[in-house]
Image 1 (cartoon, rainbow, N blue to C red):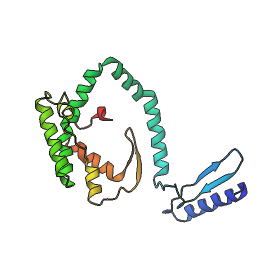
Image 2: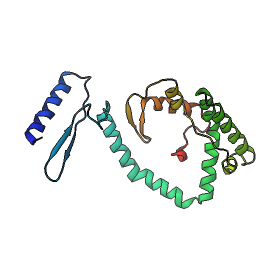
Image 3: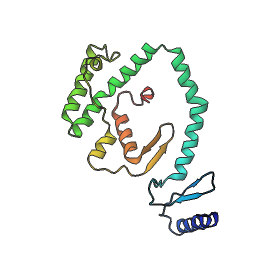
Image 4: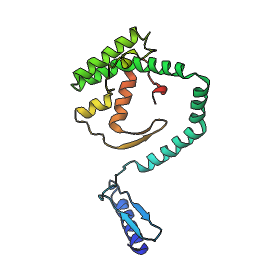
Length: 196
């Protein structure tokens, strides 16, 4: 496709977007060193439609800036000033507090074995692991899969819907955002920054 044809296709797409506010198109242009231009239009293989593209791009730039100039420095300071065994114990404690919520979500999805393993892990780590500071159950081979309310909603047929770039949290979708808000509202630790 030559550059004039490419320009005409892009202008046509922009015209369609202007006419119909509900039409969303993603155009990806690949230019090879040989100046061969390939254009993928909505519906072609490998193209995802992002209905919130302008919002998501702004939030991505915001997240990148905050990460580069603030969060990265806080994380490095935390890593260098707190010994690894202490960081591991703090993360274990906070993760352990969230296990009952994960178990409830397992049961809501019909994963009884996983729910029982999660509750068992919580009880073992809370007692033998001194309040969850030590991961005793995992070292003894008691494995479980973490479940959240977003996964539970998906299990019951709720669509993931739109891709979202969230401030500070990064990529998500509307279903998982709702699930995350619900989980954090009943989680005793609220927001566990060390989990990310």
